[in-house]
Length: 142
Image: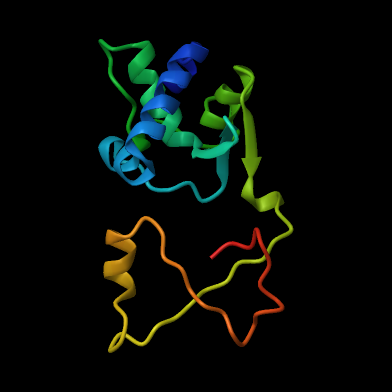
């Protein structure tokens, strides 16, 4: 099995449908992927974890072979990378390393807030920013 076999744009669209229906956490969990740290597939006005979508799409195109796991292929731009394959099919890819935005880390006192439990249980967690309010901008990563 190889990601280079993935050529059917409709298979990717089916994986995107599943992603939208189940949501990111369930989709990633089902296929054994982590959230993308570098490349995002941009479609339908949204961003998707590109490697996970490609792995799931393989299962739609080749049901007899099934989806690919994270260990089966690279998510990057090599000749057999998910990014290269998805671009070849006409999908737009956003490279997070090209962003001009900064990244922030927010900390919490574990006596008052369990960040680890929140990251497992919550799809989204909102924080107030006081000290650096003027420096944090829309699009910055956390």
